[in-house]
Length: 293
Image: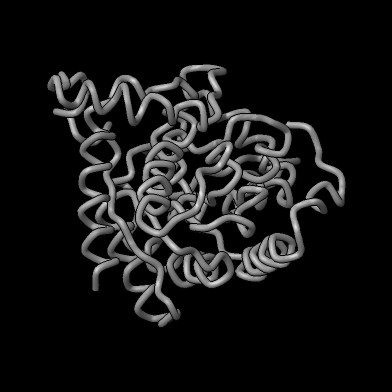
């Protein structure tokens, strides 16, 4: 991964720069890494280096666009079972400043965002559906590219070295990442809508929202990844759903950037069309309820 010179983010506006710096300062100040016998680490010049936590990717127009949408995936799978990420792990272990800002640096260099469900299209397309519903109910315009206006990160900032499955996440990591990272992220990014992937993620985000007592509080929508729902893969669409996809969803695809570099970044939106229709229906019902209260 190439280096990024100082000042490359200067065109993103003062609010973006303040939030970006604030989050970087927080991550560095926490200086928390799980034990190397549990978390992914690398040997660098004879020393064992554990990867640090990192800040969210923040779209360049995040603070200039409404609604502000913050997406929390679960964890970044960097175990030995995911060989396509091992070059990243080695690079990040050698440059901890790069590691802490790995998501924004990748996007700036026009590399795929190293969050698999984002690169596959699940996260940005769900976020775009949420923005479309918001615009329909509250006014506004759709973004040119959804990637430019949303923020995204993993709730858990570390990876277990033994298993890439999120079920292997130690319970302590949820508490530590909630207090040390997710809470400051929500405070700094001031989202209108938070999309949390996974029940446990949503549970912890909801606790943070109640603790922060923000005015107005962000809307929280819980969503599952289609890969966790076996029945979603290849589910045939009804005639009505085919029409919805063709008329309402397909035109939106041009607003999601496509990165297809390897199997890690394989575009999967079309494989799970039924999933997105179900998410859209659920999100529409949810926003109807919360906006009417």
